Length: 241
Image 1 (cartoon, rainbow, N blue to C red):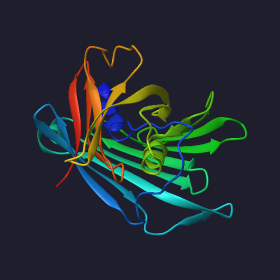
Image 2 (cartoon, rainbow, N blue to C red):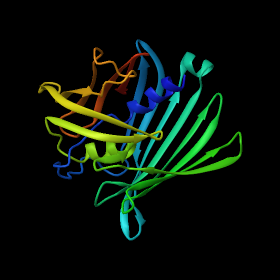
Image 3 (cartoon, rainbow, N blue to C red):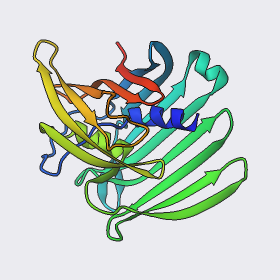
């Protein structure tokens, strides 16, 4: 079940970028996008990605506040309830996260995680609170190289750049690094969208014979649909009508 939940979290953030991309903000403050989440044919969850209607000053630099909420619905909520909240403050100059938090409430446990990004030390300070044990754990996580961001930072960067034919990124989420690439496969002018193939390293969770993809709108880089093909089945993240 832990792997199942991890797959749901990854659906919100599988949009990559390259260093050569130029900032080109393509959304407005106060934007809200709603999604339905499916496992095969079954709807199992709902999600919302939103940008706060105002900027937030941190160290005399304006920051965007980006939020993501995911919750299970229907039959899955009965057996494995999950309510997940991400929040990240993104530097308006660099489009890198300054700090972030994640609150996870499930049928078995609840915890909160706070991440502070130290770019001079090339590390992330992670503070986790486990409600059941009423204890905090403090740890440091090395970034180990460039092109590194959290889930909402990745999403925000992709929405703010002109994507190339081939993209790659290193994504930090749930105390792990995910390496993946995006290759442009097709452009549909009638539907004003582009089809990207998602390529993961050869690991058990993402078999190479199974195909994952992302469909983005051409004008605003809005994720219209994402398919995550795993060894536990196919997960879909679809923009609501």
